[in-house]
Amino acid sequence: MLSPSRGTYRAAIIGCGGRARAHMPGLKADDRIQIVALSDIRPESSESFASDFALNTRQYTDYKELLEAERPDVVVATLWTALHLPVIRECVRSGVKVILSEKPMAATWGECEEMARLAETSGVVLTFCHQRRFASGNRKVRELLGAGRFGKIERMDLFSPPHLLDCGTHSMDQALSFNSDVPVKWVHGAVDVTETVDFFNVPAEGMFTGMFYWENGVFGTIRTGTVNMDFWGGVRVTGSDGFVEAMWDGQIRRAVVYSEPGWKFPAPEEVPEEQMIGLVKNALDCLESGAEPELSYKKALRANEILFAFYASAERHERVTLPLTGVVGNPFHDMLASGLGKPKGETV
Ligand SMILES: NC(=O)c1ccc[n+]([C@@H]2O[C@H](COP(=O)([O-])OP(=O)(O)OC[C@H]3O[C@@H](n4cnc5c(N)ncnc54)[C@H](O)[C@@H]3O)[C@@H](O)[C@H]2O)c1
Figure 1 (cartoon, helix red, strand yellow):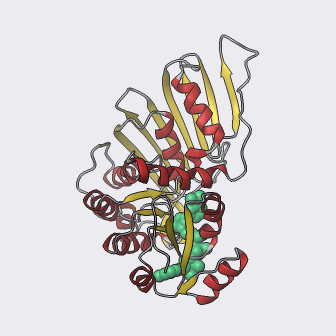
Figure 2 (cartoon, rainbow, N blue to C red):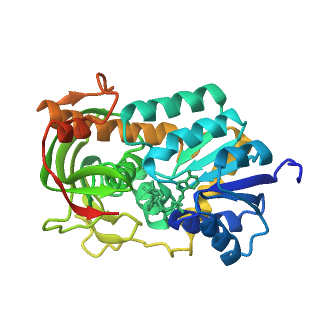
């Protein structure tokens, strides 16, 4: 076993599926990372992963055995939603320093809160994969908004394919980042169960509409679903002097400054794999500096609190004020359990 030295981190990947493959460019680009082990309940998945990426690693079908035997510094947890908390718990128990988990945090609000407690008490660097914060277009939008290019932000309209928790978390995180991660005051929302979907074994609504209000006076709306979508995934920011529409990955749909009709958005050149490279680099830099990561669990928790508050609002038919209280599970699942809707739509 190689012993860790300052600035070199022994990394393990748990769950060798699609998202693990998406993480590889970021892991390969950072010379502080040395991938030493893989885990997948299906040995053929970790074997083909190791072979495809020419990795000379040990493979485990049981991630607990991996953690016990390898004691990695960094774990990339690319698993379906229900496995996020148990794996994070075991990683913390075995002394992992950095956990890069996939989003969404969890299917219930109680699990999200437990993850935050685990991170707070252990000091582990825990991030969730809202990688789009590192897209150069999104960074440019943040810079221009911060410089007041579109005037004072007045409202944001969020768009996302289904569903609120799995996909909506990207749009909500994007909007929070555009509004300097200011907390939200209240939310109000409604679910449409004309069709329901099942993403990564999390049943959810086919469509959601909501409105919300930030503590700094910005008004927001959100719409998820695929019925008559005019804006697939992203955020429209309306300011007093203009507006900008940024797709999830930072591509600019339209940008207007009212007083300068000829003005064009200064689109930065997109660097290949910049999102995943930024994610890994930032997490390791923050481990070394002690700063809060760009994709910290604290920011993910804030986005998820809003999403669960939306579900609570839909269940209660009430506006819900944050911080969210009285929710442990998933209010939408409670609605399904009480007979609302029938799963019959898309399954991922
Ligand atoms: N950040 C993004 O843009 C983005 C995009 C798509 C999906 N996701 C999220 O990523 C997560 C994973 O999605 P995916 O597409 O990689 O799924 P996947 O099915 O392709 O991969 C999951 C892998 O985990 C393995 N696995 C299952 N149980 C395991 C266990 N106990 N121990 C070890 N391995 C186990 C499976 O065999 C599989 O190989 C989901 O939560 C999803 O919401 C994020």
